[in-house]
Length: 159
Image (cartoon, rainbow, N blue to C red):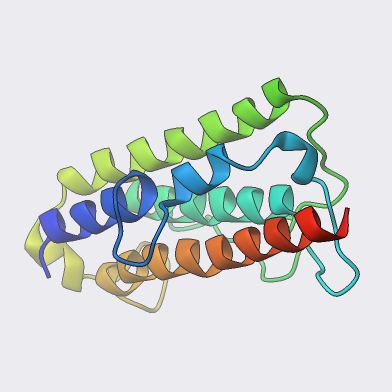
């Protein structure tokens, strides 16, 4: 694939009409903030924690796109999964949504400046290619979007 194709995929799954259903943005917009803190018995993360996790890993990719070799996120750390965070109002939710949208804009803008050859180069400070890293963003978001929608559906029935 080329850079334009990756940008198109990012845009489609985030705020377009993806083949799998509702986009990330549309799904999150339609979930009232009152559900964002809910933790069901058999699920370890809230919707908010999942969204912040997505933002953090998008931030990881942004740092790598900017050439930050030293930046890392330790798996299963506080940096990977924020604890004790809550949204108390719709304004709180909108702030998180704005941060998510900003990550989307940054990713697409930074990718536009890259060349096809850049894809095969090693990601800054990592042992894998830039293409491998970029290929991971969409499925990571979709995976967590499935969790988010499941939590919301279960919470609507349970609460």
